Image (cartoon, one colour):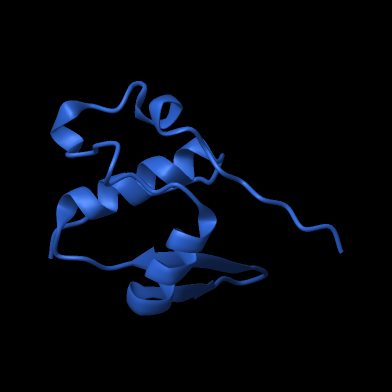
Length: 88
């Protein structure tokens, strides 16, 4: 099995991010290991059972909105489809 490493340049990842997102060079996700660690602590798997399909999703929970925006931005820059961020 080939091991793939995805590391992104922080300047590249900050391009186009609105300042309201609270994303800075020091706070941005810089690798999948951080995403996996966050998922391990505050993530869950969702399953929707349809008539002929199973839809799987990942869900992240946090009280700090900029944290979720940073995660969403990282995922989108790595071609992962994301949904909306909801406030409970």
